Image 1: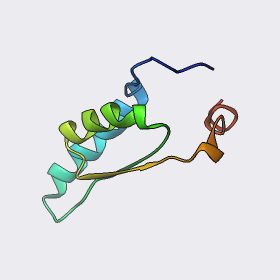
Image 2 (image 1 turned 135 degrees about the vertical axis):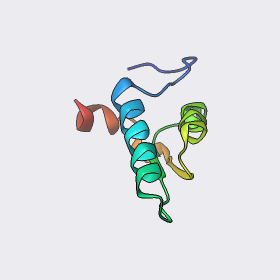
Image 3 (image 1 turned 60 degrees about the vertical axis):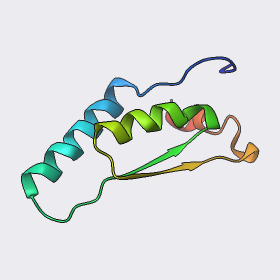
Image 4 (image 1 turned 90 degrees about the vertical axis):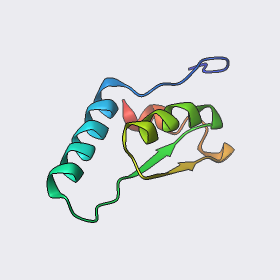
Length: 76
């Protein structure tokens, strides 16, 4: 898979998960923190910013060239 030059975005299932987490946080009205963890290249930062704008409180991007291609076989 060649991703060079492509803008990454949240997929529909990720959007749904973030929306549900934010909804749950609002319903609980307690000290709840939503943390997003993503494994990918630095180009995923824009998608992570989208999740933050939806209501996630903090995020972590795991990136190392040693992981190159690791997401494809594990997510198929």
